[in-house]
Amino acid sequence: MSAEPLAPYFAKGKVFLKVNQRKISGEVELMISEGQMLFRAIRPVLGDTIYELRVNSQNFMIIDFLEEKYLLAENTQEIRQRFLGTDIDVEELSWLLHGQMESKHFASYGGLQKDDSAFELSQRNILLQLNHTQDALQEMKKFSQSSLIYSAKISQYQNFSGKKYPALID
Image (cartoon, rainbow, N blue to C red; front, side, top):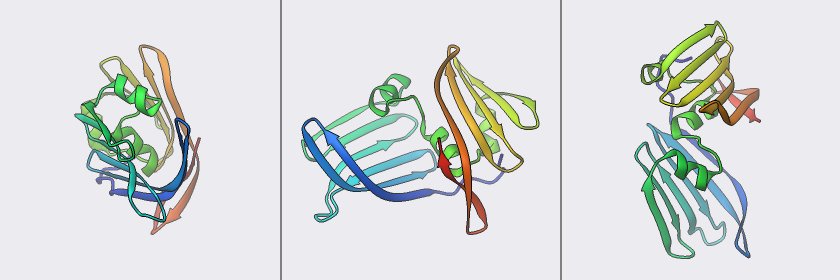
């Protein structure tokens, strides 16, 4: 686990979306910084944004530029489950993408270190189990009222600019 703050995360890629009867290919951008996330789907030739997802600790907003609609809701477990397909928040996603977690986050959870390579963190009815090596997160599981919400395993790391980053998350 890291004592220094996690750097902002930025990634680009390709996406193929099927929304209702419409098939759309494009590019995606994902930015995570200081507890906020921005996800954009963009048409490659025209360069205009198709969909945008903005999330912070309080708000969850989806903008559909094609249909000219938006949803602004409180960022709750139910909203994340409905629109993302699982209850993962911005902090947890950042930990997985960086392959580590800032030690300052232990203060917001009741933490229990099981051994040198495993932690259990609890907050209200949520339990996070984290397995790690000395400098890298290996696996994270999230439970709500003893039911598994998701399990993510970082099975491969790569080096970039002198730091290790996850290359494959299962």
